[in-house]
Length: 481
Image (cartoon, rainbow, N blue to C red; front, side, top):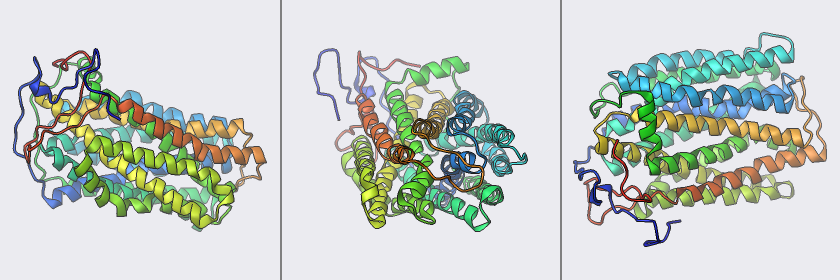
């Protein structure tokens, strides 16, 4: 996926420190993080995994099949509160950059998020319209709290270690816990709904369960990182506009961010379709739980494999490989109506293996971009980069249910206020299938083309010294901040 070397108007830079006018070499010994810090930081994924997964999995079918809200309107109700994070996440990044420590944000925002998440599914009004409006407001409040947890949390790796490979190790721990959190929250949340009577009451219990999981993750990461080292650069840029200009002017970060947003939309589209696919294509009891377990379960097994692949082939190539694995397997699921259920679950497991690789490599490439910017400018602005990153990720994951809801609306999906999905036409079932398979495959697969300007070649013999060449840029060396 690498553009050819020597083309007119394009210069590949082995390292910014080796270019005329580029920043001086940054040679620092790699810091090895203790296991306690690795585990403490990783447990924050109980929060990000639960909030990033369950709304995309449950909220759309909750609105269409329990509250009786039309599919198109439901898509907007899920999209708009999360789209708000595009505005609030960069603000949260700037505020956390200017504070003395990011950990207090984790505690206060995480505890608030746990309460607000449970509130989303209370449904205090009898009518579907009023309940839908209530869900939108509660979801907006929860999304705001999540921004003030997620942005400082994602910013921390660039300040916990100065090692290129050590950041991959930290992200491997984080993604392993993230996979477990997604598995527990995503598989058990629908099961809790079923076991507690379904409908509105079942969703109330499920919301309380996930809210409690968020509180546990908040306390675990706050306490687990209390002894963590911190490497903070000096002053930040003077204002938010200047910080945003630095972040968006970083060509590799921009390429990685846009790719991640598009891929998040594809992942969000597939997550939104899990219950619909289980009900109308597989037609199996507890199919949503089994599908989700098949999707996330393999991630725990393939994580060491992806780490080894990353060491051998680099993060960029590994990310492309994982993305294409996801896309090809998702496209294969078009044949699901004619396949036995076991075969469908096995294909979903391959999709999940690709998803695990995407998470590991994209999230370990982000701190590399941040660390390079810090070394280049001497300024502490990780929160701005992660604010834009998490805003983009949140927007992508929110677009997924919106895209899927639009497909349902176009193909004539019928909503229900009974707590059970209504009988659907052949056209509606086709929409359920295409939205779960073809659309995610196209979004995730095509997005790798956006990585053409990202280069993670590492100098031979660099050993434990972090002298990695992160990227290339057209028109010469990157600008100074």
